[in-house]
Length: 217
Image 1 (cartoon, rainbow, N blue to C red):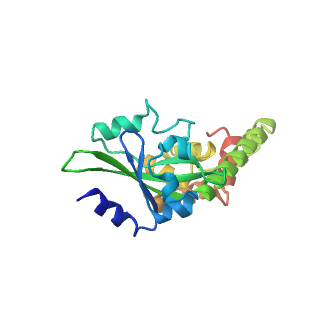
Image 2: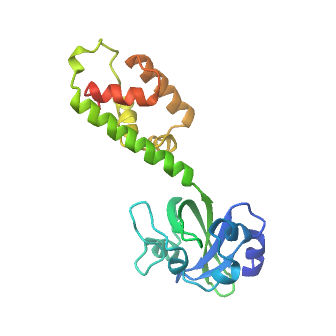
Image 3: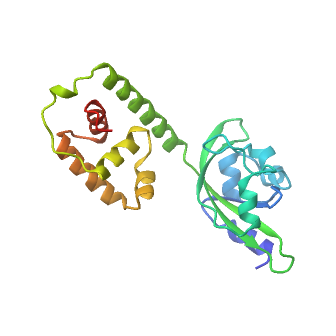
């Protein structure tokens, strides 16, 4: 497929889609990208990705820079996992997007392009930050009120259940926990139900707080 045909195909997608050369230069920019990031196509095309969007990963890593691992993935035809990226919009506001990358190669000139599919996850990030603050407060309360010996005895948690609570206690969200453990979201909900039954709690936050107070996690 010719590059222009590929770019035309991306125009019909709901996600913001833009393509980047293996040197980090933006060479296509669909209408959804214009709406999401605020930059028009004319403003974006030919610009270096890092200069335009100033992308940073979850650990503050800048992407599409000289030593960026994305370049290595593309150059070596490796599968690129989905990742979260904080970018700067035209208005100056920084926002979080989830990014999937599809590497395409022109069969004629063998030029590789990395097509980025992005959608806004700012609300999810806000919820994760709130959960982190709540769990941190729960830890502080647990350390102040060390009353584990006064609790009514509860059924013993399995190591798998303790691992789930440990992951929630550091702010990991349900989707990520299910992915890390190789289980479905419904299976994770079933585990939480059994944990609440064992601890005599009513929700995830209460279970995490209770487990920390009992020194179970």
